Amino acid sequence: MVRGGWGSGAMAFSAAGLERIAPTLGGWTGVEQPSRYDGVAHPQRSDAAKFNVSNLSPFAAGSFATALELIEEAGVGAIAARIATLTSALAQKLEDSGLPVLSPREDERRAGIVVAGFPEGNAAEAHAALALAGISATLHGPHRIRFSPHATSDLESLSHVALLLASFA
Image 1: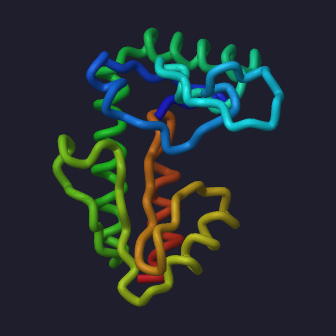
Image 2: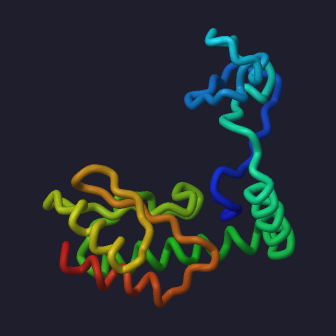
């Protein structure tokens, strides 16, 4: 994930991919004649712009450009290695705190994501505690929380996550 501003991003499609993938979230700019306000549902565009949700924000586009420049400067390989190190460390810290790790342990199967299990069904309470501590994670039902450390995360923060969640194990 690129931290480049809310609502910004990029997608690339091959011709075959563009034919086979349909948008699941549509917006008014993803249709033919988007500025014709006639009260009639317009057909979806046939090109990649059918994935548009809204007009570009100049602020989001600028943030995205800055994020891409940072990625270019640091290098994708260095970022991937840092995220692999952080996800391995987080998985170990969670296990050491008594929480099962449900995501794969192998870097190539994990994609920078660590999923902690909450067998007692108390993931919502743990998620609320994380939010109160200013930690962003994704709640997945009563039994799982998904973490996705960023390359700029630090080991102290990961230790804080594990310490906070130990009481929910």
